[in-house]
Picture 1 (cartoon, rainbow, N blue to C red):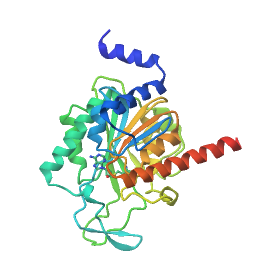
Picture 2: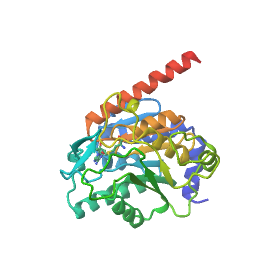
Picture 3: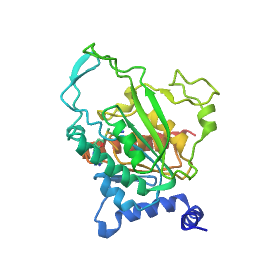
Picture 4: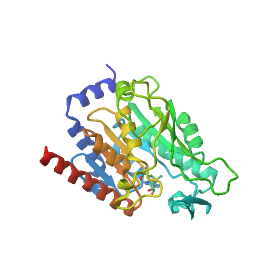
Length: 303
Ligand SMILES: C[S@@+](CC[C@H](N)C(=O)[O-])C[C@H]1O[C@@H](n2cnc3c(N)ncnc32)[C@H](O)[C@@H]1O
């Protein structure tokens, strides 16, 4: 039996909660002098650079990574929001430092993610043309095996103001496995037979295709404020249901407003680790987590 298989069997024999705690203990061991911004039984957020967190997670530890990296599109352009012309700038974190520097940045975090994933683990990367082609190339350069590219169609995308281009109404999601030979998780039946009322393109009891029609976040997802590139919960819930199993550990290196963590809690029986450099967005995430906890308690009391 090789070391990888042996480690896998050892891990399977201990409880998922214990496996999660082991990963967290590696990050927060006293000599690291790292304190989480927030932690609960199933979730933890670090107000830190994702590379710092990834370097401490340890190799072959994570089941799935969802990464929504900076788009590098904050270039003082304009877009339309609720019928008004607004600046496209999302924040300092989203400014391009030029092609070479941006490529180096993506290369570094993608390589770090590869180390931290289990061999059968998968990574999702979302983005627009500003970054997604670089990320696709770098996934391949780092030895990932691409499984799918999903086109996330936004039926309610904002109109184009200049009327000189097509209206941008989709993002691309790349899905890739760490090890070409390993067997990844794909919950085929759940994708085929599950209910996706938000998606006007998905027909009941037919295979899930690679074009997903999902509206941008609902008002209820912005109760505590919003992140400028917040993803809809329906998108993350689908990704988590498709590519993880009960007990899985999910990591988001660019936590933002915490959509991946909130979706993990909604799906249930999985563990979440998030890294975010901006404390305001960590705070937004905590508020969203606490709301979910409150709702769960209400449901349990009623039930
Ligand atoms: C595209 S947004 C993610 C939005 C998120 N998916 C959501 O639904 O709210 C990227 C986030 O990554 C954060 N960020 C940028 N560089 C980072 C780094 N090196 N480590 C951790 N977070 C980073 C930014 O502050 C920003 O909040």
